[in-house]
Structures are given as structure tokens and as C-alpha cells.
Image (cartoon, rainbow, N blue to C red; front, side, top):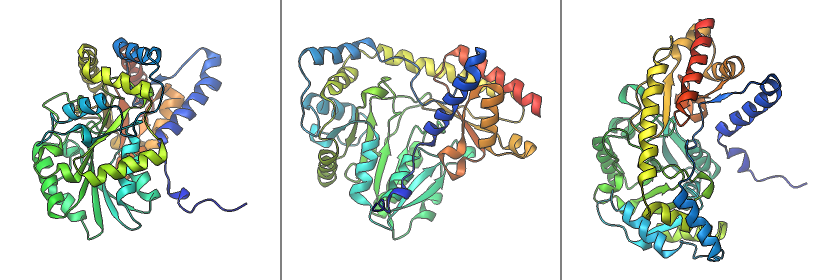
Amino acid sequence: MKPFSKRMPHLGTENAFSVIGKAKKFEQEVLAPKGEKLVYLQIGEPGFNTPDNINHAAIKAINDNQTHYTATTGIQPLREAVAKISSNYSAVPYKASDVIILPGGKPVMFYMINALIDEGDEVIVPNPSYPIYGSVTEYLGGKMVPIQLREDRNFNFTAEDLRALITPKTKMIILNSPQNPTGGVYTKELIEEIAQIAIENDLWVLSDEIYDRMVHEGEHISITSVPGMQERTVMLNGCSKTYAMTGYRVGWAVTSNKEMAEYIEKLACNDVSCTSTIAQYAALEAITGPQDQVDYMLDEYKKRRDLMVSLVNEIPGIHCHSPKGAFYLMVNVRELLDKLSISADELCDRIMKEAHVLILPGTVFGLFGDDFVRFSYVSTEDDIKEGLARIKTFIESIS
């Protein structure tokens, strides 16, 4: 048979899903026969069901036979609604024509990087970070250049760190704030410095703002709030996290750069034709309908964050800061790893098999994650208490 494309070995994946697969197998084969189960404290899935009004809008769309193609860019009312909420963060109001509705946030990454990156082009990517940024970059022949998110800076980097990485081959910077996996939030000062660097060096920016509503202290700052950045930035957002709509698969790209918007539309047309019409009407209701359930979910995440931070910091050999956004907790386990002479991967594997709690090693998220494990505080308070009690007992027993 003819060989596969030479690109395929460069395409990574979300190793978190591999970990989950391994955990499910362990739970089914080892724990279930004994009537036991894992406590899941790792997942990046909202801890609530989609609000009823959104689901009812999807059902209404079906009953109204909204089951056919739309324009590749999406239905006009949704584009207008997205433009309106995106304008809350930007220096200049967006228009509906600046919005492309897509089946989730990942296509925004894939299409923008595809539109820009040739072989050898460099993309500066925060690290530890969502692994698909680097995966797509390297698949398309680009070079991922990691910039370390430093724990002692609340998982920010500095303008000096960024300047030191820019070369004549640098074409793009990827930002994510609030962050997955650290929960860090970029400061206003850093955002303004990044914007200045991007303008000075004629760089593009992908600004992943999927957690924009999940800022626990302060407010969300978008790089599009800096004059001159809208035309060189693609803002990524969607319904998955804020509205607990991961299965609906609705995201969007927002940019005032007409040529970039046209390329994203063209790539989407070749790839998916359009986003599910039913899901688009559900998304329209999510954005324009009542927000009380969203507010409740965000309040609960903050309570669960405070609970988890408190319990984690009671465990010997590990510690964490209180994250300012998203629903993730990056926990420093270096002291424990050195004491036991094991890696974060090995620690998480032992915690799964011996304490029956699933968390993720920081290495899933890149080179600079090796000192950490990642928790998610979307679980119920009971699961958080039970999971952390098990981990504490386990660590005390081995250290």
C-alpha cells in the first residue's frame, strides 16, 4: 500500500483523552467488580447540564424544521449577537460580517494557523497550554516556540520573555486568558505590552477567550481592546464552557481583517460546509436569553475553587495558588516528586490505581508542566472533598 502523508507523524492529540480512556478501562476491569469507582477531578467539562431554555430552543428549531444548510458563516441573528458581545471587549465595535460561526473552538485554531503558517514559520505558544495549539502548528510544518507561564508570576510571562523569543521567522502569537490548564489570567499591563510587540513586529495573534466569563477576580481583558489589534487578531470563543454546551459544538472566529475572515470562511466551506443549524439556534438563545443559570454556575465554580485550593494546600509536599479564572487548578508537586524520585506521570498513575482519583500530569500540557498536576474544580463539593481526602491519605502513606 502507498505510504501515509509525511505530515501525519507531526499531528499530536489531546493526551488527556488517552488518560481518560486508560482510567475508564481500569475502573471497569478492576474497580467495578469490587463495587468501587474513581473520583474524577481532572475533566475540562462543565459540571452542569445545559440550561433548559437553551435545550428548548434546540427542540424548537427541530420542530420548526431548521434542519437544513446555512451560509458557511452562520445564521445572521447569531452573527449579530456574537458581534455584540465580542464588542464588549474590543476597542472598536465588531460587525456581524466580522463573525464566522464554526463547529467548536478547535476549527478556529486549525483554520487560522492553516491560513498563515508555511513550513519553518514560528508560532509562539504559552506553555503549559492547551496541546492543540502546538499540534496543529507542527502538523502544518510550522515550529512551535514555547513561552513559559511562570507560577511565581501567577502563570503570566513578561514582555522581556516574549521579545527574547521573536525571530525573523516569527509569524504568530497564541494567547489564552483565562488559561487552560493553569487558571492564570493575563494582566492589563501585559496585554498592552504584547499588543505593542505584535504591532512592532507585524505579528498575528490568536486570542483564545473561551473562558472569558470565568474570571473570579477582576475582569476579562481582551487584546482586541488595544487600538490597532483588531485587524491582526482572531478572537476565539464559543458556547462550550460558559453555557455547558460542549456537545453542541458551537464556536466562532471574530476578526475585522477581511482577508483573514475570507480565508477562514473558505477553509470552513471546504471542511464542514456549515455549523449545525439546530445548534446555532440553541447558541442564539444561550447568548440572548436569560443569564441567571450562567451566573449561578460561575458562582458555584468560584466556591468549588476556594474549597479545592484549601484542601490541596493541606496536603504535605504539594501546594497551589488560587487561580483567577477558568475552572482549573495547577498544583506544584515538585517537592513530592523529588522526594519519591518519580515523575508527575508516575504520580498520577499511582494516585489513580492506589487512591482511585483521576488527575492529569502537567506534562500533558507541555514541556514546562513537569512540576505540576492539574485538577479541575467542576466536580461536586462532595467529590472534591472525597477525592482530596483520598489523595491526602495516599500521599501521607507514601511520604
